[in-house]
Image (tube, rainbow, N blue to C red):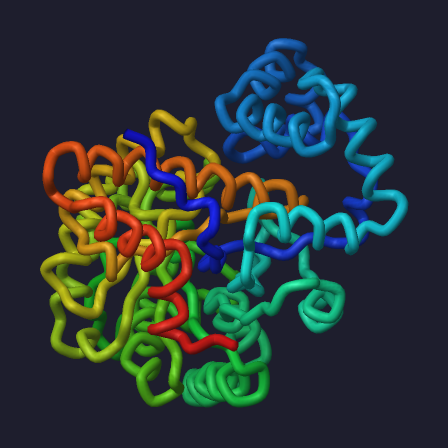
Length: 389
């Protein structure tokens, strides 16, 4: 049997902005985006790396989708030419066409950038300008790490740092109307988040202040706990990167299983916590939390569309095998160019169609229930939890 979810709108629960600079892209830009971590200038000169990047599953499936949308052959040079010609006329109108085609209702946009020198940091973007240019509504997700580093850099003492950090949270919630705070601690010290002593936190502050060191685990653990404990009063949820990412991630400590102590702590249980990227490839561990802990949700971004459709079907089925559909939300992790957000939405529906068809065939859901589950994941859960528009 085949289910059809094409009529259901999508809220992209986790993505990033893009800029006017991508009105025209090159073949090199495209293939650089189609593998995890991208290519350095030196790596891009190696023909072996170019072949690798051109034939990643992500690259091929997005290329074929773009060729179909643009009405051209799936040859990379033809797709890039047709894309740039279409975008040149009215870039933000072209972005609107993409979003209309994919049924994207709105975006939850991570406002983050890398606060230290890392291999693949995201550039700063003016989100106010970005929001004005979008043809769909947007809500902002505030990343903790740059706010932490700014508070350290501008402070004169530990107490001054705490006051500045807390004020940055207040400003984000009240003035920027953010709907969530997000941490990428998986890229800094990993997901094994402990409960450090005051002395340990103060020592890490002094070290960070003096050196901007990345390996200040105690104060990082402290700020994650502090923000989670304040989210309810600030009217926000909490997002945490879980699972793989770019090569900078602390891979041996990015499995969401490492979050057990944090998530079962009574101090965190009053905040809705979203495991961004579904813990991929450790998806079953993430799904367990969404079943056992009633404040935990799983976000499907990055796996969709960075993994292949067959791989995403397998992992999504594993997630829905344990996590109730009311605890799962769609996201794309779209970044740099709008085609990734668009392709994520197209691929996400297909993945859910295939995954939920299995649940119908095996008698877990009937067809009506499968359609209801899809509507929950694609947009209804985000609407219910966030009331974003």
